[in-house]
Image (cartoon, rainbow, N blue to C red; front, top):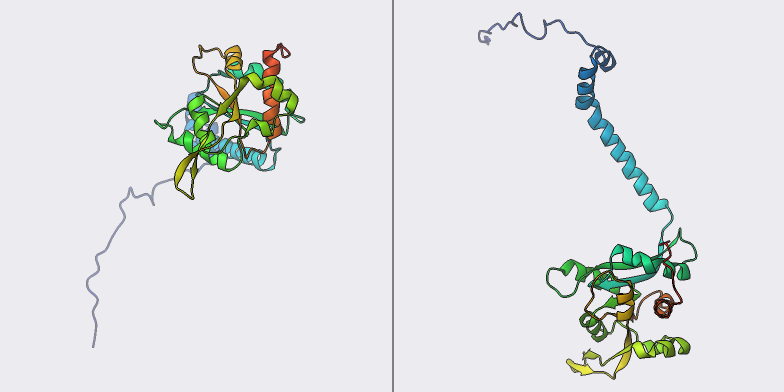
Length: 258
């Protein structure tokens, strides 16, 4: 048996096919040299600039990662959560530096923070509320600066310290006229009801301090409370002393922030 292949159609390449075209292969360096100034700039933008910027970006990321991972960590020695922020950045600078000098031993490794990224109420600030609750649960917050509504909510949530338990006697007497007493309403899980607790001084009325340092026409009263699970309660107490010194004229000049 014989199998015959079908007729094969001959194919030919046209005279102008690429395989017959004369090609000149030159290196990028030779091509670049042959261009005039305008063409060189265009060539640079088209073929080199993008790669150069990508390389710079990669190097920047590596440097940032190296500093973040291996560089010195700035450890908070005081972290205050500020609600309904009454201060500008310049206002904070006026008093933050002086307090930093009292509590920071090594400015390269330690820092004082007043986090002003919190607003009052639930309207549109779910991210801020989530941040506050998360930091509170992680024992990152040492003190609270806020108007009354936020203060009462956190006292009822058993987040604030009875100041009688942590203030030295001398400091307690010094700020006694500014103590703010609250009757907490705490949820009793056994009876599943809200129970009123005895009144206690859970905060300092710091309205005079805010008026002294704020650039705004502040109408709200502000309060300062120490957080019960804060890691730096001693520095939170020292800020109470610092506020008293500022109001008594013992801190007369602003100090640059460390």
